[in-house]
Image (cartoon, rainbow, N blue to C red; front, side, top):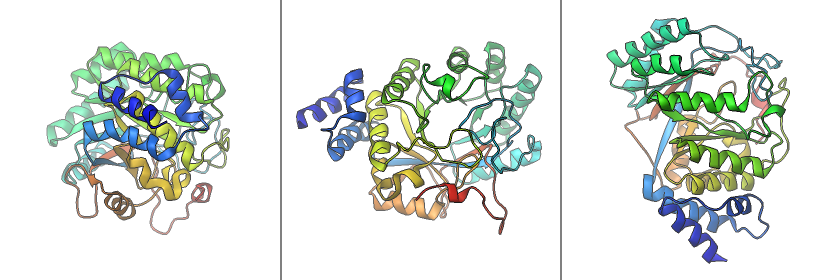
Amino acid sequence: MLDRYDRLARRALEGAAPTPEDALWMLDGTDVELLPLLHAAFVPRRHHFGRKVKVHVLNNVQNGLCPEDCGYCSQSSRSEAAIRKYPQKRDEEIFAEAERAAKAGATRYCMVLSGRGPSLQRTRRLAELIRGVKARYPIEVCLSVGLLGDEQARILAEAGLDRLNHNLNTSEGHYPAICTTHTWQDRVATLEAAHRAGIGTCSGLIVGMGERSKDVVEVAFELRRLGVPSIPVNFLIPIRGNPIVSDGSLTPERCLRVLAMMRLVNPAAEVRIAAGREGHLRSLGPLALWPANSLFVDGYLTTRGDGENETYAMIRDAGFEVEGNPLSHGVAESCASSAFRLRDGEPDPLRPEIRR
């Protein structure tokens, strides 16, 4: 049996993917041993990234007000979740967040806005913000802004955008079950437009939405086909008021199997432990660093997560180290997103929905 894990690791070191059958076995095989599988995934992870971990922090640019009907999202038109909705922040606030990110040693500043996608006029406005950030601070810029066409991608590329985030979320066959106002192919087309314009891409998935293991494998191979260098793996956080809450499939072992499979299919990609790691991985959270080399800290979109001190302690205790030059309280990479931040003393109506 150990020969099978060794073969997977060797193929990954050579840049080759496992067969779809092997990928499905990693998720569903009753004879899979978790620790040997995690070690097989660690081999290419160590080869490409050593024992370093990139840490990302989310801040807010725009929240809610989205016309799309994505059932998993508390910012969508179908959600009744209790979030604060507000339009895009003022330029001064965005530049101030970029400055804080640069001073914290961040390599990339990511602006994430809710909505279907920008008009040409708004794209040009975003391009000016990108130019402003890059002119002021020695930092790369990432943007997540919904669907884009070739003209929008060209405008953003000319402004110097380094990376575009747009998640596939699930397979093409399962996509109509989670969203009807745009298609899976619309998302693929956005990534292809960014690639044609010379913009780096970031795209991942959400598991726990009623998909089959076959759907998860299909996404992993599609991300490989697209050559996506940065892959966030989200574990659905059940939020009261969302149409899609939980399918009950996300045990800690299931989450670890997904991360290991994603690493072995995409051996050189930055694999990120994204939303839901605290509630779904629970005490096995440190093991996720064997396949993954990146994670979020302090919250996700419209929910909260473990703080910096707790996360940094976990990384150190597991024998890994933070990449970059974080402050003593720790920020290695900062992203501005559609997350909301609670003011001191403000109750968090969503926190109880994160299962621990």
